[in-house]
Amino acid sequence: MKFVFYANTDWYLYNFRLSTALRLKAEGHDVVMLSPPGEFGERFSAHELRWIQLTMDRASLNPFREAQTISALTRILRAERPDLLHNFTVKCAIYGALAARAARVPAVVNAVAGMGYVFASDAMLARTLRPMVKLLMRGTLGGKQSRLILQNPDDADAFVRARLVPQQHIRVIRSSGVNLERFLPVEAISGPRPLRVLMAARLLWEKGIGEFIEAARMLRAQGRNIEFVIAGSPDPGNPRSASREQAEGWVAEGLVDWRGHVDDMPTLMRSMDVIALPSYYREGVPKSLIEAAACGLAVVTTNLPGCREVVSEDGVDGLHVEPRCARSLAERLAMLDDDRVLVRRLGDEARRKAMEHFDEQMVIRRTIEVYDELLPSRGVPNRAAA
Image 1 (cartoon, rainbow, N blue to C red):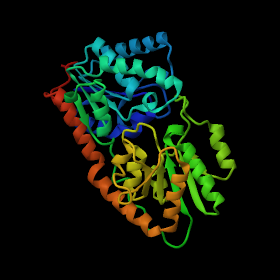
Image 2 (cartoon, rainbow, N blue to C red):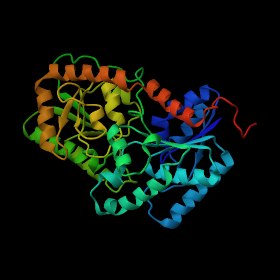
Image 3 (cartoon, one colour):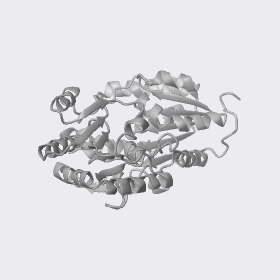
Image 4 (cartoon, one colour):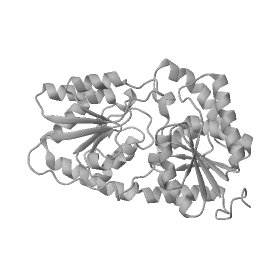
């Protein structure tokens, strides 16, 4: 059988969905990766996976340009004739579902990791777009031969209450999973040294980047010697992204060590003590949090949908902070700076939870089970090759 994975960046497909694609390939299926151009796409060839580029502007609101994108996507699907199309992110899910219908793709799986900018932001643009996006979702994501994968029960409840997708078509799979063989536990702190706090995320204001910077400023003013590290880049496709110039300004101020995009996250995380994500974004389950949990870092985040899947009980498997409150974050980090035993205890519990709930192999298995609901004859040779 043939599967097409469609996302709005090649970076997402490579970092979050490569393992699932390789599992399907190992079972004898044909897997095609589809995304806009990017620097990660060429890496698929090393895994003997085909990559197709689709011109697409994530931030575009031009109806003519968007119609061209859907038309181009439809042509690709007609040429490829996949048995199943798996779409990732809200925009790709809507466009993919429309194109799949026109191209008569037998089965469609839509994966939405969080509600994204349109539902998370209070900006005028987001509020304006929200009714239209809901209407499009209601008209495209609930097909009989489709399933919607969400990453937390809060989002599932929101979709059902808004009557966007029938409940029987929704499946909850917590996170995209973490490779427990790559993300290994940190070693115990030996000797006195500054607490190392990492934020790994796109530089979006709703991710809490502003609160992270302000907490660093507060704790520095208190005379605390805490190392703040950011791994992540600005997101030009999101109107709520901080700029490169702003990030460079924080570095010049001496507040943070900004690493930009980091390829080797396991090594970076194993050099840290704490991960902080003071997000008020409508997360699915943040990848950085489960990776950090697998490494045994103490997790500090908000008690909001997605984030609470990782830290469900304050003081047990991590610490909660108030959304949009830099002072709350600063107080929690100061607590950890004063109590390294607590850092280790929270990290150990985070690792245990990652092993039980976020193992990548379990996530892949459950994802393929969703495919099997729609393709009960999976394993039969691709109809295009028959």
